[in-house]
View 1 (tube, rainbow, N blue to C red):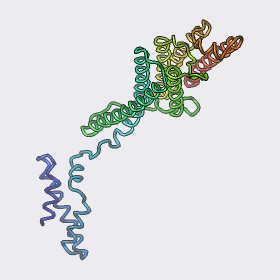
View 2 (cartoon, rainbow, N blue to C red):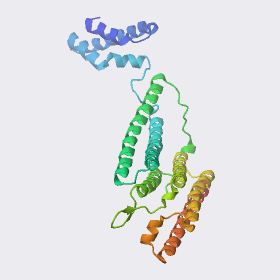
View 3 (cartoon, rainbow, N blue to C red):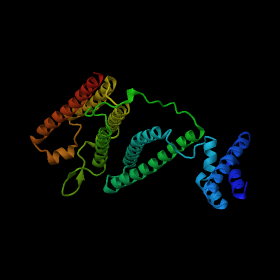
View 4 (cartoon, rainbow, N blue to C red):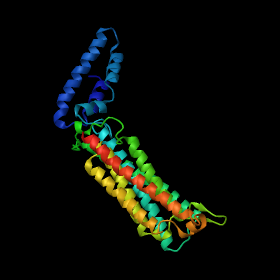
Length: 319
């Protein structure tokens, strides 16, 4: 063997177990010599033939990894789909929960400290929530990828198995990714609107902005409302993960909907939903009963549609 060939073989076997180095050395020596002889017989100079053969074999560390059946990747094809699906699910769950939780905690802290609601507060809530969401997203992506990189390198079985039960239903059943995104965005927008109404307000007078919702709902009434929103988000995520509606998920959706609608209707009837300052300023006289009636019909209609739609989709999926 020449210097190049010997150096190549030494580099290729150095990371192999000692028990396998001898066999691999003999195999490489024979195959390299045969390839060089074939090129020399074809009229190529020996030095050029040797360089060409070793170049075609490629990096000796890559060759050694193939002999040792050792993957040279962080996340390879074996666990890629499991990693990707889990990462997306975690990002959709953890980031919104962290942002909403941070916003609620900040608003409650400011109110407990007796600070007046202002645009500075809402700016602090939005800015802090966005910064926290980005930080949480980076951490979720990093640690999830690290775990799967370790699983890939060590050959550990994740235990995740695909089956035909995971096949999605034909379109139009409200279980697709777009349906999940729309549901989460809508729920997040509603939560953000409630926080904005408390911090700044949606009703504008010549002197100031005022909230539409009765601020006496804080903290327990609003906390109950956010709990129903979180439950609705979990139902949407479960439907997407399951790939179809089930009777249990439809029943859970009904519970979340009723937990929101019934207290809202009771508060509306008892004049505990809308801010007294708002109603006195913008809904004088007969305008208030009419507005309450319209709001009541809207709440009942939306809640009824959500409940019926869930059970209809569950029955269709069962068939």
